[in-house]
Image (cartoon, rainbow, N blue to C red; front, top):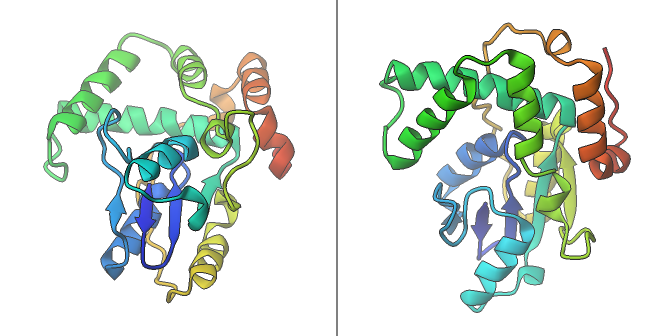
Length: 218
């Protein structure tokens, strides 16, 4: 979650949809007043929903509707597999205490979670757990009646153009979009998914699939 009071915009950062790229591109410009915290139970949580943001803004005497709200969605099969690769990578970085990471409480807890998630389990079992345990993308941009409450839902597959449109709409210069969290894991998505998992994602992410026309393509 990123909020600029001066330029009146905010981002709802759905996990594994390029939110780190937005953060690393916009924060150095000095226009972001609130950068989401990694602590889930705190106000303005990094991956808080639009409803969470509405509540936290109201507590600060601000109105969600006064801000241009922006979020990014992603092919749901690719997104869940991206979680899978991220957890695999983070497990190794935690076990090796990768020096590029500042190992504070959130990072340590994440490392422990990844070890437990992956320990002695096959890839499909892990992927199924990831699909079942992570919120669907529509839960981030919809209200209590599952109505869309953000102004723009961008697509990860065209992120650079979408980012330029965001900057243009809120009247800021478009910086070069940085690309963070790229996985180097060679594991093949289509060799990991089976029909059960393909159908599980299709059912869970039905709304975003219909909204953006996603389909599982082998």
